[in-house]
Image (cartoon, rainbow, N blue to C red; front, side, top):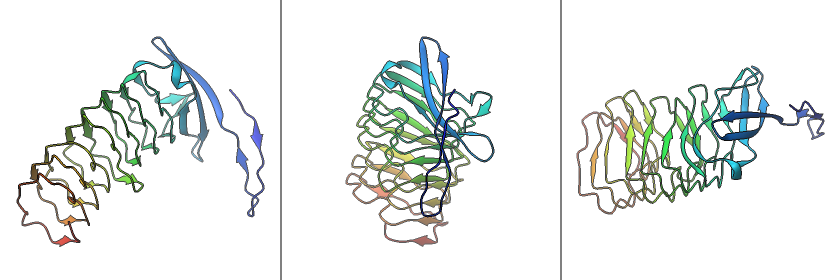
Length: 235
């Protein structure tokens, strides 16, 4: 474990600590990690630094050196072509942008209880066919679709209890139908943009739809607007 520190002098003379490191083992995999600690002494920005050596179904550790893991860093497993499944522990609340980008063998993902997910977090995961969005999700950060280039992703399910479908969450996928749980009140901008094979939509009891939420859904044949809808800004 590295405890080296550095002082970086910006205009505000801020102090910065170098990333810490740790190793964990799961099955035949030994993971080399880098991470930081937040003010609550929790692990943030967890990143695997030996992705080429990792394969099979993996579970992200819920603790590192006895401290809870609360976020996965951007590019944490990018281009990790050997992994086939990922389980995110319930301690993790955030997944950074490009975290699992181009994991081309990835078929199964359990998102745990995340509250935020970064832009193109699963872009190019060409073997991913189905994903369940947990009820805890609040935001998708960025201006690029989370599952862009997931050409086999045809099923996206939403847990009951979800309140919002964030911007760019499901856009540019090959889903053919969606059912929005009654708990969802808001569909944000571009949420299903360019889902070119989307045919059937059940909007549940939504109250607001953001701009371009269904733009480019060329095969959409019929949609019923619920009586609960009271705000829209160009869908």
